[in-house]
Image 1 (cartoon, rainbow, N blue to C red):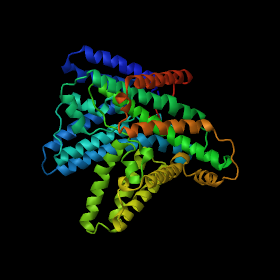
Image 2 (cartoon, rainbow, N blue to C red):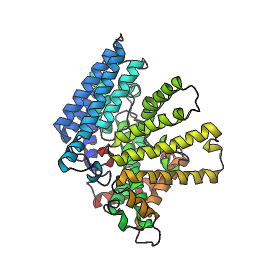
Image 3 (cartoon, one colour):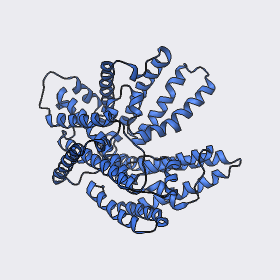
Image 4 (cartoon, rainbow, N blue to C red):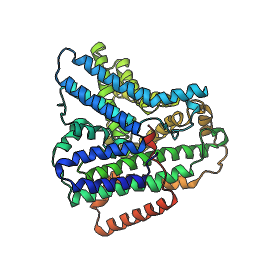
Length: 473
């Protein structure tokens, strides 16, 4: 089963009614029960796997808190078990299919739209949460929780289990301990986030996915340069709006339950370098990788090569981080190549900054900032070609992008939806808040939300069954 926007909305509404009918001490158990039921509607095996991993990490956290000489061993057992669960359950299906079909991973699907139906929903997200919880407890920066219900909500909270964001235990569990107050101001913020999220998902992302050329990257040689460039642009913007829309929706849903979820996007399309891009795109994953991969690898290298200008100190942390990020998304060679290319971008930036120095983007002329934003986005999109096309179709895809002899028949509707996205991001970035519309005068605010809701209603009449794409990862 793929969760659609309308089925998710119905489930949230039913859970909200029950949540506020019970006494406060029963609210967290209601959230846990709803989350388990949510997983069972996908598959009872998904729920069983989630319960086993949750119980394992809860128990390991208590054992790690006791310390002792086996503390380091326990930590590695915990990390290894979580990683093994992720690897075997997420990639075992791909391996079995490859052996059965005698095919490479890239021939199983030409884009990231190929869904792994046997992968437990949300496993990529709650495994990373389990690992970060164990590391924080072992470091002594977090006291392990002894509330099994609260920990269960942290691991498999239904509003974020499908596609994140990846929450830190200290921040999330702390909210579950406190009384949660939902007033008119919180409801208005939740409504704004949900409306913007629905608009991104139903009005921009879903139409983009529908009008993009079918199997564009598998038949790249038949497309002209403008057609291929527009297809690539459309895929990037469709993925961005789908994932950003989902995150804004679940953040709004979380507010209705008195839970503040982590922000996952901060106008990444306007990033002026790749370091900034990865601090704005999928923020919860980027920060997880920074804290649990990049910094540990960087510190380990500095202890051995004391010169921070050493090439290994500059290159290896970025390479390790982006390869882990790629493997987290998928084990296909094309995705790993995508990670390597992005690592190369980061290394070049880092070497340039350390060896020759560079001014912060905010201190540079506005025209230069905009030019760098355009270059950064263009290179990021080009790096996404192996992600989308796979190794098998990589050469014709890049070759098509270089073939600009004829215009072909590019679909201008893609450019319209891209322009709408850029306009929405620009308005939000100017206010430095995705809820900036709430600060507008009442007539303008009412008009904007009325138009947004009208567009959403029209879009739902066109298609109500499109799944959230990032549930595939």
